[in-house]
Amino acid sequence: MPIKVSVDLSRLEKEFANQNLVNARKAALNDAHQAMEKYVPKLSGDLRKDSAMSIDGTKIMYMMPYAKAQFYGFITNKYGGPFRIRHYTTTAETPPNYVNTSRRWDLRLKGNKQDMKLVKEAFVNGANWHK
Image (cartoon, rainbow, N blue to C red; front, side, top):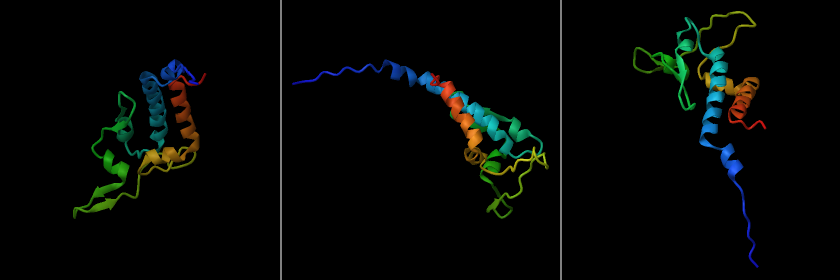
């Protein structure tokens, strides 16, 4: 005895439409970019100012030539070997404005539950899943 089942996936397809996911990524990346700014090293502010998001919302690009070395925390010393950067700069030296800047500021954001909650909410709101 055969059973016929029909499934309407139109609502599911609408929820996971490519444009909805792109909008969600853009919204989440925008919030992440703003939240990570406090962890980016700052001496003159150029590294923080010269950054941009990709059009499709997949990455943040830091334009300064030294951005990669600051992000990963290594520079080449005079002998050609890697040298770990240990002292990162920030302009505020006293609480509450002082934030401990260092390498891998993306991981600092991931470790901050309060900021990550805002990024997740931005993703959900950007995809219009908050109904």
